[in-house]
Length: 117
Length: 113
Image (tube, rainbow over all chains, first blue to last red; front, side, top):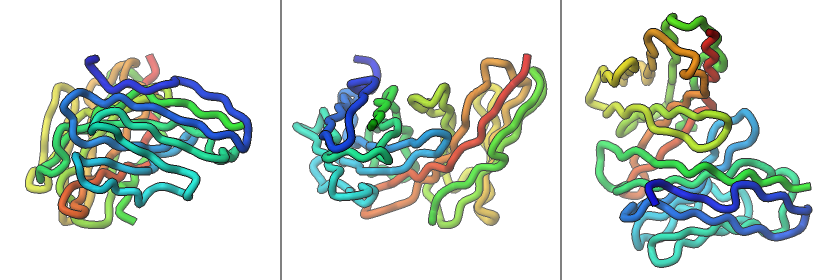
């Protein structure tokens, strides 16, 4: 595909259930990021993967949140025992090379809107 | 916090006018990027300015960076109704040998036809 894709586009779940969100980055991009955006707010960094390095998990809000990236490509973000405050749009982004000083733009997927009832 | 802060939070102008949005940050950066978001979904990269650059242009966009004041501005000239969106600045700073982006809360721009 030409861009970053995410699935599902919308997810409604009940409090206490687990959810999995999927991200397919652009082929060849070594860096992958997850962000969370609450209504009317900016992006909150959650986690990022860079190649085979250990992921930077510093933004995960609690141990209910985890993510993995298999084979350096597809990533899944898992939220266990969801709470109402987890309701937000979860955005995934990828970039070509995050280790080059001078910067690389991030390409965003359309997001998954999660609603926890 | 190293988060960029945009100013104003909301801006409403008439078509044809110029729109200026500002971003301030707190620590040294590698570069600063501006993104646009429509309807609360995915963001689109607009422009990147490196820490050793002072001004950059792309079409109707003009970005300035003042590292002494730790601030940047995004100017959209001759605005159009289609420019209506939220605009975010993102500061890139080194972390653990690589680079991390931190986004501000955004400026919501409305261009009235």
